[in-house]
Length: 136
Image (tube, helix red, strand yellow):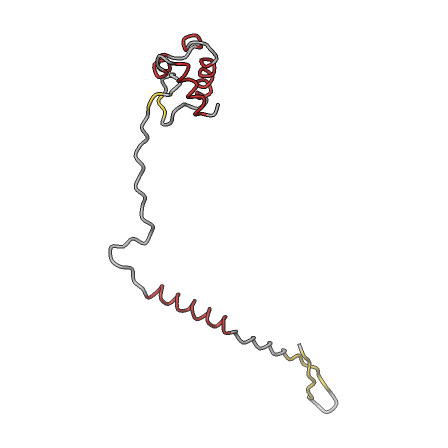
């Protein structure tokens, strides 16, 4: 604050505080003016534009996915699953395949009858193909 002196009487001088003038705002650049005008225009357009009748204001709802087809787990446990195996059962299945490729029969390794049927009569070749495709 700036101070000024005022005379009340010839012998007395009193200091009085006078508020300093606020600095003048800087003028807007051309880019700032343009941006401000665009914002004002958009705000005015958003308020003034009515929604067409029958149009929803929210995003369209997605069509629900059809329920997953359930089928028995490939290891032969009988559990109904949406994928190929129940969690952890793929290890059991691929373990059987490795032992079958190693020379044992499906019955010797304890593979279920559904696995034996799936492999067919040439079970060693089928087991090798399963292992090769799975990367085990």
